[in-house]
Amino acid sequence: MPTTSFTFVLPALNASGPLFERALRSIRSQDYPRELVEIIVADGGSTDSTIADAERHDARVIPNPNRLAEWGVKEGMLVATGDIVVVFAADNELVRPNWLSAVAVLFERDPELAAVYGRLASGDDDPALNKYVALIQSEPLNWFLNRNLETYLEHATRDDHGFAHFEVDPARPLVWGANGLAVRRSFALPAWQRPGYVADVDAFHATVRAGHRRVAYLPRPFVYHHQVATLGDYRRKWRRNAVQHLVEQSDDRDLDWVLVPGFRRRAVLWGIYSVIPVFSTADALRRAVADR
Image (cartoon, rainbow, N blue to C red):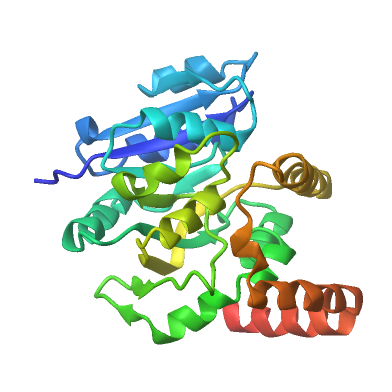
């Protein structure tokens, strides 16, 4: 019988609708003991049926007075009771009913495992733009910076279920956060307990710097991310991330991991790559062929 308990922390603000329903249903339909799965919805002041929808799926609703998603994750982390905390979103969906079982086995087999993550995927019914965003795993700048993952995967050990296991070097960071990132609460909690705003990716790197470097990654679809349908959605999402989560919170954020030499060099190259279309077009075509 499984013994590992989970908490899903899900920030929400007027999230009611089909995607929120799919997110909650994908958690509650897992082939895992229900009593070992806690859902915490950190609500930023919804005026629609978000709270009622969450409670219908036996979620615990807590207030998120600062409204931003990252604040909601922090509020949820501080009251979570599970051994493993999964940072989730209202537009996420677990890809298969044995997701929790597979992740639990990884943490149970390796007491030093700090985090489990995997490839974000678009659903079959998602629009073309969302499929593009899934292909680059969020947005172009993060995708360009996050090429360290490819090097890690080349040298990782693989288990029978396809998970790659490796240790993260703080000097070669990864852009990991939200969207199904599962962390061992006892390792990760100190990073979220620091005063002020804490970004999920900053907390991940604080955990790595504290010595908890062992992680696992699934190169196959791990979580569906139904995030954008139109260019307007994409523009709003980019603006929200750039302004609300970066510029406005920069004084409180621990961004040392962004300033390592490899990331600084890539940030300069990004300007060239994005301005001269021949580079990005050729790269996109190569990856489209490789990803079928």
